[in-house]
Amino acid sequence: MREYLLTLCVTVAVTYLLTGPVRKFAIAAGAMPKIRARDVHREPTPRLGGIAMFGGLCAGLLVADHLPNLNGVFELSNEPRALLSGAALIWLIGVLDDKFEIDALIKLGAQMISAGVMVMQGLTVLWIPVPGIGTVSLTQWQGNLLTVALVVITINAVNFVDGLDGLAAGLVCIAAAAFFLYAYRIWFGYAIEAAAPATLFAAILMGMCIGFLPHNMHPARIFMGDSGSMLIGLVLAASAISITGQVDPDAMALFAGGERNATHAMLPVFIPLLLPLTIIAIPVADLVLAIVRRTWNGQSPFAADRGHLHHRLLEVGHSHSRAVLIMYFWSALIAFGALAYSVHSASMLIVLVIVALSAVGLVLLLLPRFTPRAPRWAESFLPPRYRRRRTTVVGAAAPTAVEAVRSGSPTGPPEEALERTPASYGLHGATALSSRPANGRTRDRERA
Image 1 (spheres, helix red, strand yellow):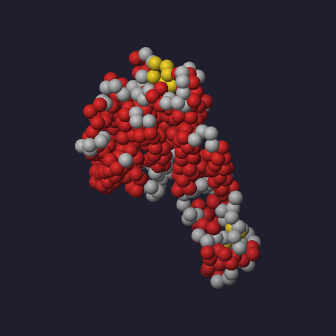
Image 2 (spheres, rainbow, N blue to C red):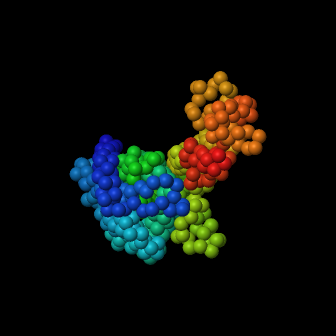
Image 3 (cartoon, rainbow, N blue to C red):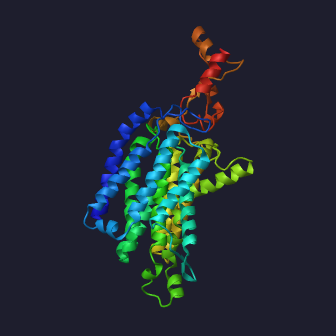
């Protein structure tokens, strides 16, 4: 564990220190696209953050190769080299896309080629555990196709959810943390050396995301771009494929008799193995909904729009930071809930805790529907966003603010003032991030 933590810390430090120079390079290289209709940020922000994340990946693998206990991962397995080869290719395509806007079909082809490079070097699914049947061996073509499909789905799921500051990096970091605990439990608890590469990949992935998040939290100073989102999606997919297709589930059946009984008895352990994408359930759900929505509207599945889950949270009325935290909450609930169930499936307490936290999450989702009403005497103790703001009524019966200032007359009694909410400004997801009512000021100026 100490060597995993050292690898994690080195990856965090390298990624964090490289992000600043990479930001200056992105500005100098002109990798600052214009603000699009679906974007929620107001100012052009440099991309190419994936360059720093790729540097953190290389540093983490290099340090792990020189540590006594983790060096065996590189000697006994070719998976780290396969990961580095596929990651380098997908990162290069992402860098070109951040600068020159590559066509979506070309990126899809590059994702398949990157997955194929990893498959050719041995990082592929060899068998899958099926409850009630046992371990099912796959043919070479079946394993290769399944591996490519998992890689492409995971990359695009992470890429689709990268729409708010710190969202993609945070969700993948949470997923990597849950996956690290699960993989480490299999490697250390069951003494299965084949789980060591997946544990290492998850630790490095956490370091890449943690090191990049301080620069990417709202308001973001730099975006990871496709060079970063596709990179962390590929690393996450490689971790899941490594532990799903390389670890023999029968090696964990230490207390059951036959193969069917062993598989049935170890069903809680198989859940994260059979469904590795549950750790990124939120991005995958967003991906599926986006494909269905765009296809239903007669658009290309790769056509960008403002219908993602994070866009809908903004339209409901959540602030930028609150929308990101809500997505964090649901991702952690699903990932760590599956992890807890795989450890203690017979505990009803885990189920009750998950249900209770789900209820809390639903309340958080509906929070903008409820306007807090605090008494006047308590407003001085509350944040400014919860205080009542008074403005004059604009109309024929009451003078405008400009006329009142010119004449020196009061604008009306306090009880006639209206509390102006964001809904009265006609805001939507792209403009609901600011606490300053720009539209209201424009109306006052026009009417004056």
